[in-house]
Length: 251
Image (tube, rainbow, N blue to C red; front, top):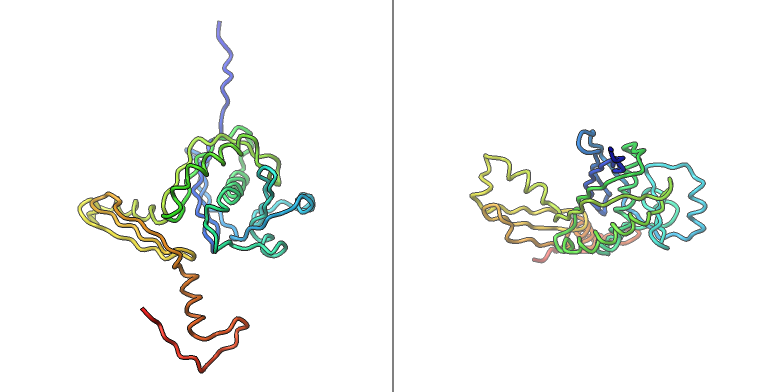
């Protein structure tokens, strides 16, 4: 007598996410044969009250703005976060601080854009974080897995999924991995360093014969460079220029 097969047919979704403070980006694909798509959204995020969620629930669902509920907390991300709710890119905060709602928003957007109709979903997530924050990955994984199990509130209902994999890599690791496959570089015979100047962070990774031996990150990104230039050039907050101020750059 044959037993009935009760196993579910899961749709596997793979998502790589970069929580940039100039823009949030991601690449998503239905595994193994789906065509990868690119995701992008403005970096602003704002906390919301229940009344705001009720208002947004009556609006047309769009890809440029995502609102989500995690537990009793509600957030809005993207275009409307900036234009209607005075959201910020949280450039002064650690990326990890807002990583959970931002990752949840990108995951919902990925599933929507990929056209996944199957309610049984397995997620494989790869997140990029600054070197100094990559160690927070395991805590973030546990929180994300628990909330995906109970359900994250989204514009199209509760998002539930099984988190099968959650990996965190330091920003810039992908470039190093790509270079390691280039036979002309002799990656596994040399010491190779990579300096990445992002919008919020500047990070440095040093590899010696294929082994990462040094990785550091600071907040001296392009935002800091622009701020220092404006400050030392003598441009005031309202845009007027102090032409008498001498420009000096110190070591």
